[in-house]
Length: 98
Image (cartoon, rainbow, N blue to C red; front, side, top):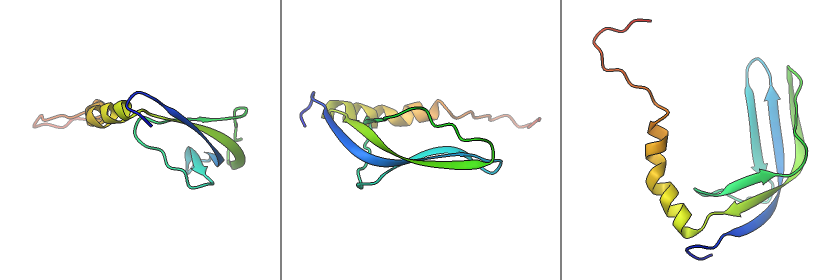
Protein backbone atom coordinates (compact mmCIF):
# COMPACT_ATOMS: atom_id res chain seq x y z
CA UNK A 1 0.00 0.00 0.00
CA UNK A 2 1.40 3.37 -1.02
CA UNK A 3 0.97 6.92 0.21
CA UNK A 4 -1.88 7.61 -2.24
CA UNK A 5 -3.23 4.18 -3.21
CA UNK A 6 -6.04 2.22 -1.57
CA UNK A 7 -6.53 -1.52 -1.29
CA UNK A 8 -9.80 -3.44 -1.26
CA UNK A 9 -10.27 -6.52 0.92
CA UNK A 10 -13.27 -8.85 1.16
CA UNK A 11 -14.07 -10.56 4.45
CA UNK A 12 -16.86 -12.79 5.73
CA UNK A 13 -18.65 -11.22 8.67
CA UNK A 14 -21.49 -11.65 11.13
CA UNK A 15 -23.92 -8.77 11.57
CA UNK A 16 -25.86 -8.50 14.83
CA UNK A 17 -28.78 -6.06 15.08
CA UNK A 18 -30.54 -5.67 18.43
CA UNK A 19 -33.84 -3.82 18.88
CA UNK A 20 -34.58 -4.47 22.54
CA UNK A 21 -35.55 -2.27 25.48
CA UNK A 22 -32.16 -2.95 27.09
CA UNK A 23 -30.05 -2.43 23.98
CA UNK A 24 -30.35 -0.83 20.54
CA UNK A 25 -27.23 -1.62 18.52
CA UNK A 26 -25.74 -2.97 15.32
CA UNK A 27 -22.34 -4.70 15.37
CA UNK A 28 -20.18 -6.25 12.63
CA UNK A 29 -17.68 -8.97 13.55
CA UNK A 30 -15.20 -10.12 10.92
CA UNK A 31 -15.09 -13.92 10.89
CA UNK A 32 -11.56 -14.06 9.44
CA UNK A 33 -10.02 -11.82 12.11
CA UNK A 34 -9.66 -8.73 9.90
CA UNK A 35 -9.21 -5.41 11.69
CA UNK A 36 -10.26 -1.90 10.74
CA UNK A 37 -7.73 0.92 10.95
CA UNK A 38 -8.31 4.69 11.13
CA UNK A 39 -9.66 5.97 7.82
CA UNK A 40 -10.80 2.56 6.51
CA UNK A 41 -14.32 2.17 5.11
CA UNK A 42 -16.48 -0.92 5.63
CA UNK A 43 -19.46 -1.78 3.45
CA UNK A 44 -21.60 -4.78 4.35
CA UNK A 45 -23.16 -6.42 1.29
CA UNK A 46 -26.84 -7.38 1.16
CA UNK A 47 -30.22 -5.92 1.98
CA UNK A 48 -31.02 -3.87 5.05
CA UNK A 49 -31.50 -5.86 8.27
CA UNK A 50 -34.57 -4.91 10.31
CA UNK A 51 -35.00 -6.47 13.75
CA UNK A 52 -38.51 -6.47 15.22
CA UNK A 53 -38.86 -4.91 18.67
CA UNK A 54 -37.64 -7.24 21.40
CA UNK A 55 -35.45 -9.36 19.11
CA UNK A 56 -31.80 -9.75 18.16
CA UNK A 57 -31.06 -10.74 14.55
CA UNK A 58 -27.74 -12.29 13.47
CA UNK A 59 -26.85 -12.84 9.81
CA UNK A 60 -23.75 -14.01 7.96
CA UNK A 61 -22.72 -11.50 5.30
CA UNK A 62 -19.79 -10.47 3.15
CA UNK A 63 -18.03 -7.17 3.89
CA UNK A 64 -15.86 -5.03 1.64
CA UNK A 65 -13.09 -3.16 3.44
CA UNK A 66 -11.58 -0.23 1.55
CA UNK A 67 -8.22 0.38 3.20
CA UNK A 68 -7.20 4.02 3.58
CA UNK A 69 -3.99 5.19 1.97
CA UNK A 70 -1.06 6.04 4.26
CA UNK A 71 -1.80 9.75 3.79
CA UNK A 72 -5.47 9.27 4.77
CA UNK A 73 -4.47 7.23 7.82
CA UNK A 74 -2.10 9.98 8.93
CA UNK A 75 -4.74 12.70 8.39
CA UNK A 76 -7.36 10.70 10.32
CA UNK A 77 -5.00 10.20 13.26
CA UNK A 78 -4.07 13.91 13.31
CA UNK A 79 -7.65 15.25 13.12
CA UNK A 80 -9.55 12.51 14.93
CA UNK A 81 -9.19 13.97 18.43
CA UNK A 82 -10.47 17.37 17.28
CA UNK A 83 -13.54 15.81 15.67
CA UNK A 84 -14.35 13.80 18.80
CA UNK A 85 -14.13 16.92 20.94
CA UNK A 86 -16.83 18.53 18.77
CA UNK A 87 -19.25 15.94 20.17
CA UNK A 88 -18.59 17.04 23.75
CA UNK A 89 -20.45 19.84 25.45
CA UNK A 90 -18.78 21.52 28.41
CA UNK A 91 -20.12 24.02 30.91
CA UNK A 92 -17.95 25.88 33.42
CA UNK A 93 -20.63 27.91 35.19
CA UNK A 94 -20.86 27.88 38.97
CA UNK A 95 -24.57 27.15 39.03
CA UNK A 96 -25.93 24.02 37.50
CA UNK A 97 -29.59 24.13 36.52
CA UNK A 98 -31.59 21.32 35.04
